Image 1 (cartoon, each protein chain N blue to C red):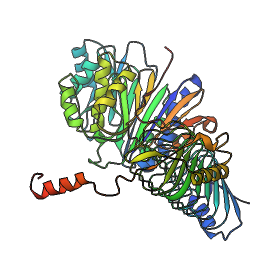
Image 2 (cartoon, chains in turn cyan, red):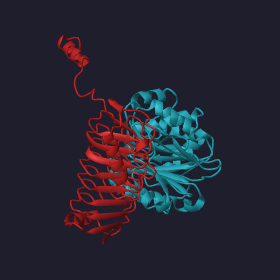
Image 3 (cartoon, chains in turn green, purple):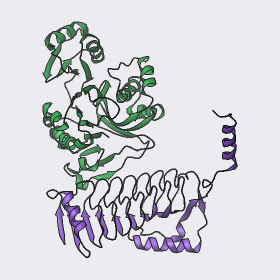
Image 4 (cartoon, each protein chain N blue to C red):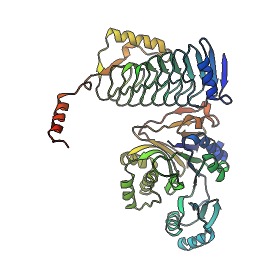
Length: 299
Length: 236
């Protein structure tokens, strides 16, 4: 199973309560995936700054010296703050280089995301507790994605939890399973992507990152995904200033979308949408198989 | 009329009250907010109105009574319906009317993928379009589509009838267009009337009929060749 939700604020109206509304949606999807959860949220960020969210599960890391070492590598100022077992670095330097350096040099750490807008948190356990521990409810911003996981093909681990992000401000939540992810992972590794788990959904995130790094728009990247990804999927995707949805051509995995003047919401089930402000008057529809849906903020 | 507000009442309380009804009662359900299994297992001649959208398996295993949903329904609307009426004003997602053995299911808007999958005698009338693989392995009953049908309509169909007013993107294996004979016109006219107002503006003359070519009912000579080849060891 698994439950996915996404909320994209088209106007200012609900940006101050993005996290609270996302938590409400996540709670409704709790029984679709009670073993672990995660969320990513996008805000305006600070000009010229990249944030890198890092998970160090079950180990103690003294983040100060890590930031100091990273400063030397990037030749740019780095600050860090910790949120339970996550740390959020901020730098004016190269985010992609920072991600790779942390993967290569901080034993036991997993880089969850990097970009100017995104922060990403995930953990094993009850989705409500995960949302509470990382204070999803107080987050503000333009859009958010969240996932509740019911592991069916691999162990219940934080590294198997969604969302997955391998490229700048590009992240994905997935309901389904891919069947050609091992071959695709090897291909992408040969084209400059690096992966930190054995998870199929991370490969999908890496695929989009690779396409977008090569100059594709999110729509072009998803057109490629329809050709190159084999398996079952309903994806909700976050990018800088944008939000997208894609289902495979068979469309076994559920999805429903609702849109008002103020927001677009996507979920595995309508009950996650039903509690949003204005939901009763929203336009509600089921995304069609193999059709790419995108929304973006006016620049 | 008895009202259940699902912000307070549980679905178990609602469904138990519907199961305990003996006939003639009316019920109203408010604030369903996408809840699953609303009004499942009704067995008496009762009326239920649901004000808002419902989740999975609404009015599943339905018999005798009438359920009206003022909103949308998610996966498996009226799954395995035996008799009676289930009507929604909005859209249904996948597998509406799946495996239904009798009764009538009316979807005012569009129905998603696999509408009427494995239907076994139910009549399904959709005011809008149906998604891909609708009437997959349909065995008996009628599927009426006032809009368009997406790809692979009626794949591996048995003896169900499909009537489509708009375009058919493609027909599935062994599904073919068939002549509309007087008895089909009569059936269709009755269903369009029974499903009104979801069928407003639809005329019997605008529909085409689709059904089984019955080519998958028996082994063909090609299959015999395959069996013999296997016996001779040509196929491992």
